Image (cartoon, rainbow, N blue to C red; front, side, top):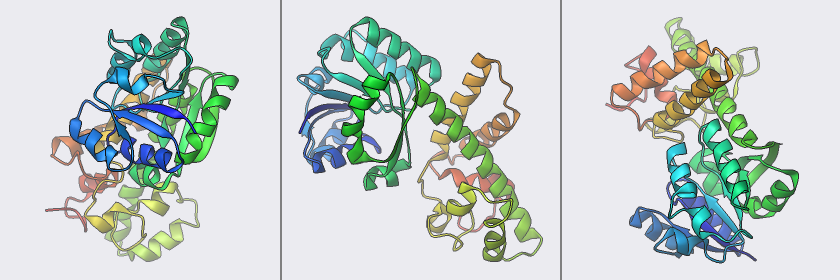
Length: 301
């Protein structure tokens, strides 16, 4: 078994590290929030008080951070990973960050003599707890092959998406497509009900017809239709609207940098912004239905 450094023990990092501990690894965990470190310690993570302690002697270092700015600071700062880790440690960033930041981390890590893999995940907190996350890895064949055995206790699927920042590219595009599909589902759900269609009957039709999609099958925004939907639980977040807003924003930034117009992504980004402006950033993304029908069943308040 291996010694791992882990930086970022929030809603995703905490259950991910718990699965690594269950697999027999020693995980030295650090977060700037002491309560997060304490919560991870309850699941077997060895709590440490600094980034330098987390990376000391690690075979592999994982980071799970909110944004590109945080990842750049954690890796590139004077007191960061590149300053303290041994170059024998493999570095894996599982944050969801912008494409340009991911490429910068690859470049700077290589210049400092490190091997680096960008490895964002899909599956949310539920997948993190179950150890069924999808990992999208970007890096050299050799580095990705080395990372895979460490990742397996946390994963249901592992894909080598390509070279530098390819994992981030795949994650950004995937989540953009999810958000666009979901916007169609919430609009369709409201219109179907206004036409007088029973929600379950319509759902059964759509899921075997051309209107089928992943969010229709798993996130249908009407209570009692599909078991996995947040609409059954007052739209408590499986994937919070604020996080989806961030991810679609990353896609729009990527589109701008690559010269690609993304009109549907722009529309749904605006719809997510409206949800946030109305005070519902913490609800599940499927609460987008509120913008179409403020009185939709299952919404809080």
